[in-house]
Amino acid sequence: MNKGFLVTFEGGEGCGKSTQIKLFTEFLKKNKFRFVVSREPGGTPVCEEIRKVLLSSKSEITSKAEFLLFSSARAQHVAEVVKPSLEQGKVVILDRFYDSSFAYQGYAGNLEVKEIEEITKFAIDGCVPDLTIIFDISYEDGIKRKNADVNLKTLDRIESKGESYHNKVRAGYLQIAHDNPDRVVVLDATKTKEEIFEEVQDIFLERFNLKIQKIRKNLNEKIRNKNI
Ligand code: TYD
Image (cartoon, rainbow, N blue to C red; front, side, top):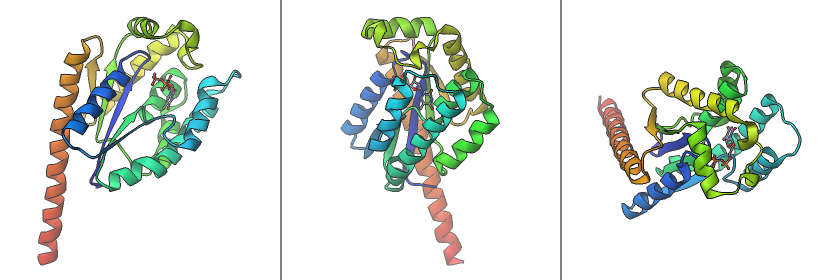
C-alpha cells in the first residue's frame, strides 16, 4: 500500500469539476497537506501533445484508437506524475482518470468493458484511486452551465458528440458507481458549489483518515511479525 492518497474527480460535461478542484486545492493548501493536482488527458509534456490530438483532431477517430491514445497518455502520466507522488506520500488530485474511459469509450462509445479493464490494468500499474467523486448532472443542465461559461463554438471534438452519447456517459458513470461502492461516491452536481464542496470535504476527510488508520495497522503488524 502506498503512503499517498489518490482522489479522482469525474463527471459529464459542465458538471462543475474544475470549480470543486479549485476549492479542494485551496482547502488542502490551508490545511498544509502535501499535494499535486493534475489532469487527464495531460499532466506532462508528452501527454499534453496527445491531448491536442484527442480533443482537436478534425478527423474521425475510432473508439478503439481513441481509447488507446487516452491509455498511452495515462501510462505516461502514471509513471511520471501519479506513482512517484503517491510514493512520496502526497495527496494526488486528478481531474479525470480511467473511469472517464469506461464512461466515454466504453458505455457511450461501445467498447467492451472487459477490453477496457485489461488495457487499463496495464496502463495504471496498480494506481487505483482511494476515492473517486462523480459529479452527476444531466446533459441539458451540464450544457446550459457550459454555455453560460463559454461560447458554444468552442466545444471540442468529444463535447460535440451530442445528447444521446452524453446521456450514455452519464448512465455509464452511475453504473461504475454501482459496481464500485467502496471507492466511488456520487454527488448531485445541481446543488450550489458551497453545498457540494461541504460534501467533498467531508467525504475526503473520512476516507483519508480511514487510510491513515489502515497504514498504521499494517505497520504495527509488520513490527509485531518481526518481533516474533
Ligand atoms: P476537458 O477539456 O478536460 O473536459 P472537461 O472539462 O469536461 O474535463 O476534456 C477532456 C475530454 O476528454 C472530455 O470530454 C472527456 C474526454 N475523455 C474521454 O473521453 N476518455 C478519457 O479517458 C478521458 C481521460 C477523457
